[in-house]
Length: 247
Image (cartoon, rainbow, N blue to C red; front, side):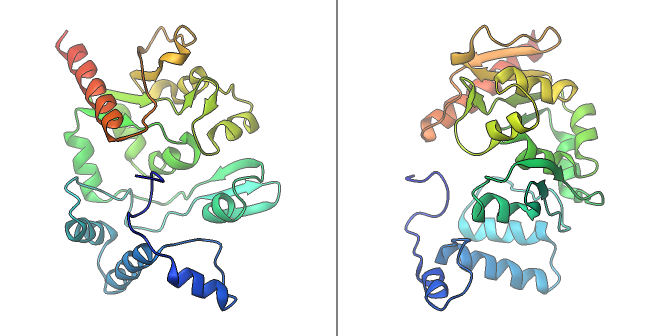
């Protein structure tokens, strides 16, 4: 609740001891996180697929939603920057996403597991969350055949803008848009997604600044500071798309 990420009641004794011993401590994982990653690595080394391991971990943690990894294969994101090619976490965490990005490099051979394909085949609606389109969503959409399935199958594809009032609420999305020569605006996000989506959701701060003759627009409050705001926005998107389907 305090950070918006991580585990409540986390402790840091392991990584603090790594630092004291002179080891690499730039990626600051908590003790609970390390326990999860150790268990995941153990299960993967036993030959289990990442999809099955994720299901097991969700069961153990009491996560009721169906969480599906985009691929059972390693699918690393690399970035070509003015400091050379960097792994995503090195760029994002160690370098605090400061090196200018020239290109996001994604693997060409990543394939979606059967559970993802089945979910997309059954989906009436796909929502692209207000996350970074270049390093959060593109790596998923790049996995074969996710982009093609999203384009062809669901009745509606919705994107929620991560840009509000000409700025990103957090993270490097606005900086990356400037580096790509894109306008840092909700309109810039809509233009980037183009033919992939049917409905575009943007914050009421940008009311009247988004035009899209071929898309349906929803202007609402998209800033989510707490669980109630997240629930409200999700319910509003579901109700809006259902009304359109029934019209």
